[in-house]
Length: 159
Image 1: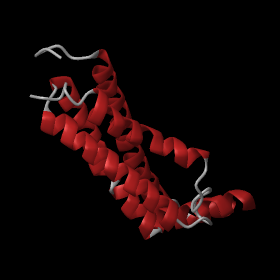
Image 2 (image 1 turned 180 degrees about the horizontal axis):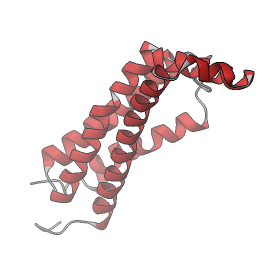
Image 3 (image 1 turned 60 degrees about the horizontal axis):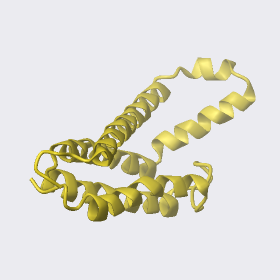
């Protein structure tokens, strides 16, 4: 590929990285906000709720207090950063920012997904401990990223 001409697929990959990076950051902020909201929810309000809502609130409190979930959620911050920085690298066709950080994102995300399957308590998180359709979907983009930047776009990330 000639200097300065970026393939449309690489641009699309960058846009997907930006979107997913934003969603991951929103998820982290939502988790933090939800934990804070649960911490400051008055017990008197919880007592007024129907029994099934009280059970849901107890489960949510356990989820927000679970150290495994908190650590895995904390690792989403570097995942989001890697997604956004590698997206910039794809646009600028940079070898380090695109290729190396893109590969780092994909490997980290695959490792975190496996850790989530293995370590999360299935009583707290529905589907945890199982390899199901949703976990397969979570593997698709990192594996696709590894494939594309190491084969199709390998020669385009040269700067």
